[in-house]
Image 1 (tube, rainbow, N blue to C red):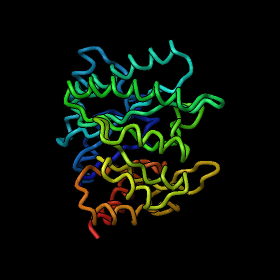
Image 2: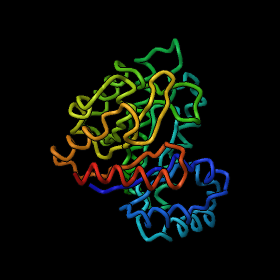
Image 3: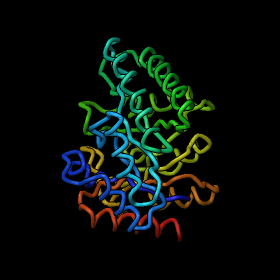
Image 4: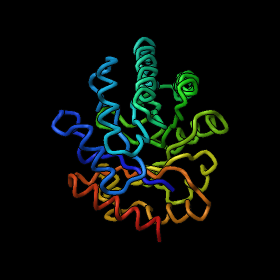
Length: 271
């Protein structure tokens, strides 16, 4: 398994420009990560010069960029807005390729109360497959996720529901889009390791995170919550999983928290 990290704890600082991309890249190398992840929100200048400079910063630590997390909303009932989201997502994939990323994490979109789930899923899958075709051209591996709710949205994810999650899984199984399996989000829907076992053949990467409470959703440092982190990683190792394991570090303890919970995750893997 290769170890990476998505630094939720310092998101605000990077997005505000207070923490530079090269600082994150170099810190990731210092704590002996094999790769490191970013959010598309970190990339504010997408001009050719801006992307060239961003890539230079990201390469300064000497380890590869793993995953770029993106947040498209394909489940919206607004056809015009969905079209805009699709074009933005295609731009995100191209940007990730320009930056040298291996993976792009994509989302289904928000759940809008009262919407027709079957019709919404049809539009989601249509958009995802268009994105998958573009990703393939740029040698990017596209990933969907059992997702809950990012700060960028008002509502939870379309698949933050046992039935809708299974609907998405059935539609995407065997196709070009593999899965980023999120341990904490599985816990939020009431699952332990059985969901990982069920979806294993589709899983390319794993998000390692923990959750203190389900209602309200409250994430925490790895090992301090109720998610089956250690058990899921043990099962992954037993099954021979050799993909990327990314610490989605959301303790909000800053740099020290990132270092601490990466070390804890590494100890789980090594044991």
